[in-house]
Image (cartoon, rainbow, N blue to C red; front, side, top):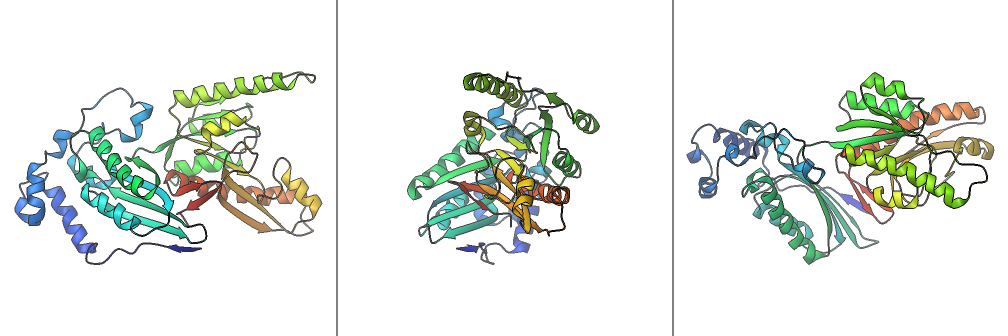
Length: 384
């Protein structure tokens, strides 16, 4: 399999030309500088309304979950329009064929979009093509935000239908809202919160959910609401149906919090509970788990102890999306470290925790930046 990054032709993406275009766009929000623009743009710009005239009015109520990422109610100063506010990321996959890249680029150009970054991968063995495009759509406004996005989505769908393409697009600079599920181990939880505080992870973390109260002090330390949702205890002679009912009730409480806090990303930071099949299906494309072994080896519980008994010379950690099959979801990132016969189980656990932190943080960072594309039970990661 070969991986290639698109190299833009120099005559189209000259750095000085891009910089001058950027400066002219900002200047025209303050002075009538139409004469400084290339003539082919003058007629288009003369028909456009001022940027501040087409932005929606500020609202004190929070945006609904359906349009949260498209909210434009803050920071409406014209100087900020070309600094990331109106950027979008398009992920797509389709059968490998001629003309896909050209069609996508031409479509975005026709909509007034400016491509900022593109990456692609073609798999000759499977005949598949994957692409990620990050672009600025501030010149594609036809009215309010919803109308512009609807027009852009219709244009993308027209290309997708031609090439039998699956696609997804995320607009705006609103960070994803992530819920952390954890049990008693704190190393991944602390690492995520510290990386968030240092702005290594670009997201919002509005809550922590746990089936134990052990780590409540961590939430208090970082000023994040901590919800203790204990699993219902069942009798030893409880039937399978009774145990499943208790599990579903527990998961229903978790999902109520997801809705209340408008969650779109979930991380299982050593959450030691087996989730139901239906829960996994509802959240499989936005829920990341960290497993403390180099999958597919030693899936399930107590992998370090089993690795010690097996006498392995290498242990690892795996970050993957969840599926109904335990520890069998699409893998995002993995890493390993060598061990020897001198390492005890405790030594292996300590070395493994360092791997778990780094592997999970990389996987989260790529997911939050929309750099992961899922195809069947595999991933294409444009973060390496």
